[in-house]
Image 1 (spheres, rainbow, N blue to C red):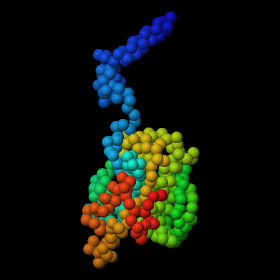
Image 2 (cartoon, rainbow, N blue to C red):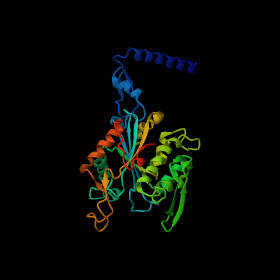
Image 3 (spheres, one colour):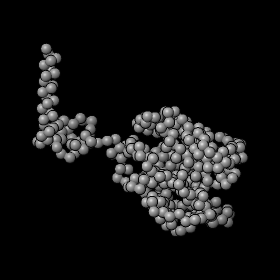
Image 4 (cartoon, rainbow, N blue to C red):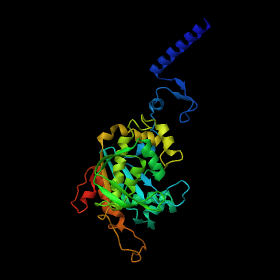
Length: 346
């Protein structure tokens, strides 16, 4: 009898609350104290009250206020977490324009001279803000954050995805690929066509820069790195992926806990993941900054910079700014060049 009385009182209160919600005037409701962004009571029917209940994960991400989103991916030549000195030899700016459904992967030469040094040394010597400033000068884009990975992290991530599908564009062999300790060299071969690569294999594919058949350059290495990023988009949802079906908090914790370094928050990750459902609506373009935009002034010691470096052909990278902007807006017109094979869409 006592339990029935309690239930009856509860039902009466519930009906009363529903009526008051419908009326929506002059009524206050208790808000959990854990939700510190709202006071303990809030008038029903006000915009803030309904916004509170409509809020989704990711709504607090500062990326939501941006038009084009720019995240810098940094690959460092660190072989263990105890290694102190390293360079950011891989630098890929991922730009996403939700208005035009364009995704642009932009790589710059690691020997580009800017802000008083080679760009691949800026992070270790001066920190993130200096590297961020350099990329904004080069690309004309506002940079919103970075994700940094080393050799170990990269292998782990690819294997956690269950391997990644890659379409190799041409057959090549690198006869002088350095082994894991840099104490010797290996001969590695990749054959044109489809291959599902594990962590070690994909790292080799991404690092090789002395291959035959036109693959022996930093420019072509950057192109292969873009292919790997494209493959990762598909690999996430593989049955073998430990992250599928996607659990954002678990994924974020696994990636950032003693592994990768990033300025992105959990809220940012929620916001970015929301784009994944529409990934097939986007076009993806690989763009490598080449000799159209930079040139080599000479070899050491003839170079005034006393190093093997590249500098901008156009002061302030004006041409590069215009081309990146046009690519993201979908207005870029390709000019026939000798290096045309090195740029374009996937």
